Length: 334
Ligand SMILES: NC(=O)c1ccc[n+]([C@@H]2O[C@H](COP(=O)([O-])OP(=O)(O)OC[C@H]3O[C@@H](n4cnc5c(N)ncnc54)[C@H](O)[C@@H]3O)[C@@H](O)[C@H]2O)c1
Ligand SMILES: O=P(O)(O)OC[C@H](O)CO
Image 1 (spheres, rainbow, N blue to C red):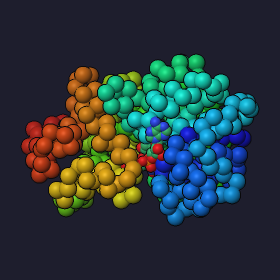
Image 2 (image 1 turned 45 degrees about the vertical axis):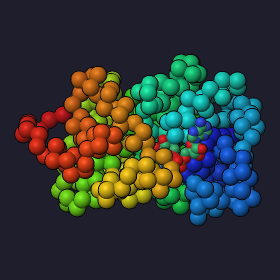
Image 3 (image 1 turned 135 degrees about the horizontal axis):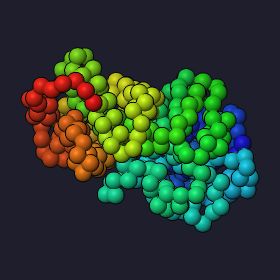
């Protein structure tokens, strides 16, 4: 199969590595200098240092050539957008000029400002007819690049596209499940990032494993409440893109979002933490959008509110924890 991955950050590069062992893969990045260096050194030292790029992987900054790679043979091709959520609209806009066969995106979050999910951004720009879907689930880039086992979910309304993604990605230590609950899968992927910031704060303040388990569990209730209010299905939140990714991101120190929380607990400034990461932390970018969306829908999300307050309203992490603990006792339910 011919596959083009648009976006050579940590995740786009990591996924290109196992795929290039089975398919004709082109990895495109917008930074020409960095892509030339990556091609020469056979390593993306900017975003994924330490992982050799397979010989057969084409690395380029030539957008036209990268997209034509999959347009020429639409029946046997896959186009993957691997930018952050903030880059998805621009990337999709650049694709308008091409007869693209399909589009799968890897980003997890809501667009700032519009509060749209990735599939809504893609639909706005490229229309509803395109075969499109989200590839999500618990997956740290470095582990996938090392070839360690992982399981992902492809979500979309187009069954043929889901089958093609399964055919392309399943195997070699990656298992793929499919789902038609795009809203549920995207809400799980977006909100878990905010909850990982909360768990990072709790762990950074040494509040203990009991507190961490409570945050993850009540965080899952928040994801589920919002997801159901938006049209997602409860069982989706019990799956890989829901509780699976929530557990990984809240507990794994490879998570950039968790590291934001750990930094806040050390009283570091948000700008400094983000600059130090050198990668996107989508939970920071979409916490305000999720808070606003939840309020609009009348959905209670106290942990998300607390994280947004600590990130943007000048509330200290100690006050954030105090606010959560001061909430009235209630029946345990969603
Ligand atoms: N890193 C992971 O382990 C991982 C795993 C699963 C999903 N994700 C999700 O995938 C997305 C990308 O994550 P990442 O780790 O690769 O981030 P990253 O910060 O390492 O890289 C982001 C990439 O997006 C590109 N980009 C941004 N705007 C763009 C635009 N307008 N046009 C083209 N490219 C653009 C940047 O140049 C960069 O290469 C995020 O939404 C993240 O939540 C990441
Ligand atoms: O490093 P994070 O926090 O962006 O999380 C990466 C992936 O989404 C984990 O599945």
